[in-house]
Length: 158
Length: 66
Image 1 (cartoon, rainbow over the protein chains, first blue to last red):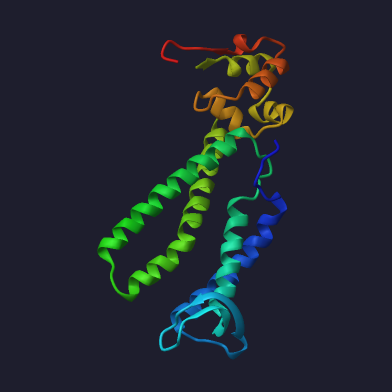
Image 2: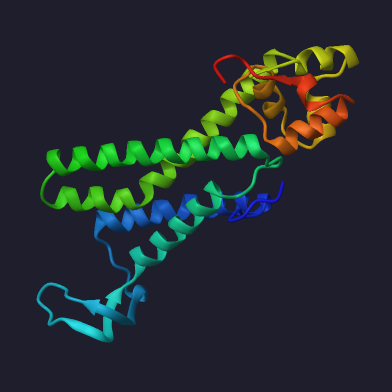
């Protein structure tokens, strides 16, 4: 079945291989506040207003890009894992994808709304950062569960 | 919507996997259609009817609440 916006099935495994070390590295950099010197790059920015520095618009700043780099790799990996075709991609698996994505969106926003009211200060910033990845994680887990459940019932009835 | 997929399949003595491979869909799809959890598209319904050499209406039947 021809599907739009889907990556080839063969891309999934490399994406999983990329996801594990990059997510560990991103989490480590985020929580340890460690900033390796080789990640200090001069960057072109549209807008920057870091604390104790004058705002920069459409100019260059120096920043430690470790989190940006690993965060980008994690996001790309999650998108490829979530939207790479299964071995047999058909209309039923597409419907499961749709259901999983809808479910993930609802659950994600329930978590966000609860966090808005229950979590304050710097911890809320961590919630927002985690939220960048959470919807894709939920989607992938839900879709895999639906596929597993469909496969499990099939095994019992030939 | 009711369907006679399971009956037609048993007449030919083929498994869900055999039918899925012949039609080009996943085994889960055939199971979901047979158990009424999923209503196939027109394209898939026609493919199934062609496989069993019958009309789509012979395989699928509307229920009163459809």
